[in-house]
Image (cartoon, rainbow, N blue to C red; front, side, top):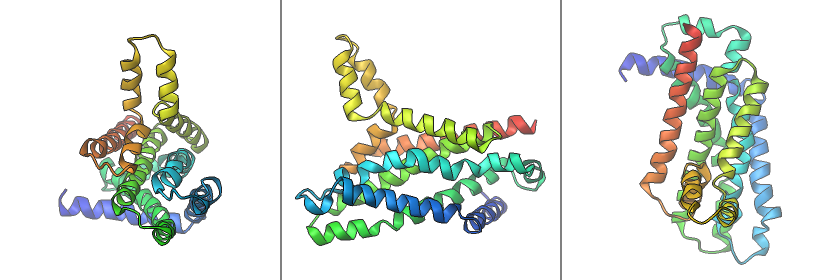
Length: 252
């Protein structure tokens, strides 16, 4: 990326990021995320009443389900809003390439999630006060949580580029994120393995491997394996490529 490409991407980023601050979307999403993540941790997991203060089983375990709804809520406006307002043609005629627009918009939404996730530092501080936790699983858990959010956001971006309705984009994105989470849930995977005939367990394991959840749980345990990071990065890149194809098909 040369200097001009960077400047164009930065221009789109600033436009989108300021748009979040100029609307209640940013504040509502961040507040809901904080209430949901900390509410589940302190009231459902009851971390203060337990000897087990592991964030993996008390805090991060709720994040995939929260992102299933909230990530599409942030990402559904990325391109559907441009189509609805009729500004997609204007954006595409500006001296900005589709990829510069895609990256600028995606990074703006990514920063929104970085703000929301960063504000949960009070949970880590509480765990540190209650005991002496290993910092490794906490760091890898936050990385896993952020990568999971970005994967859901990238998928929503691709769906948004293919639809004109924010409502349709939201519904399809939530459904996709829910399915991709359920096929990798350890309890569901084990139940299917027990139900299928002998010899088909490998197929169930193979399908679950492509779930976000399978790679997410490995990282929250403090197992920082490069293949899990590469998996999420690959999903994000693939989804953004689909976004580019969707925009080009409508531009043609």
